[in-house]
Image (tube, rainbow, N blue to C red; front, top):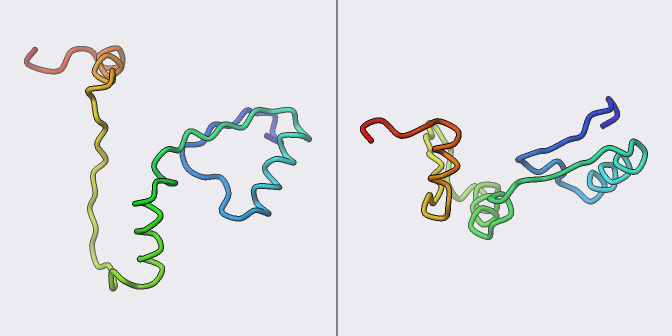
Length: 90
């Protein structure tokens, strides 16, 4: 924002109240727009897993692989089609 750009993030921009205060102050000082589009970080199951990981409940990770799926039945098929066209084989 201090570079004259509006900001949209898909991850939390702050982890403490002081960092949140700094972010609000930057918006006030610059007149720029800050928007957070995160949805999963604050879900209870994600917070639970972060707490367990910080407590060492998962042991030491040697390798990890994950996937992120969206429920496409709520209009996301149309979004995907607009972005990438029809799926192969249709």
